[in-house]
Length: 113
Image (cartoon, rainbow, N blue to C red):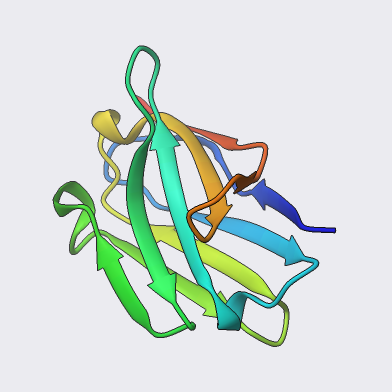
């Protein structure tokens, strides 16, 4: 049974950092595409970053140079390191396996002074 559990969200000031974690079970993250998405109130969910086979990465332009997606294959975890956070990064962040319907429950990130 596939399970994805996000953690690490919270309230942070502009310019601050957070690291989101996604604990995966029921499959191996190193063998698939893993993505971090976000959804702000009133907006569509968008892909923030993805990583394939633990190596090849892609980022939406708005986070390039600030966010880093990575995996820990030994722990079967996916991370999103977020630096230089901006108020517009405020959203609920979700972890997703591949391009199907396997999603985590989300973790809230709020960037505000």
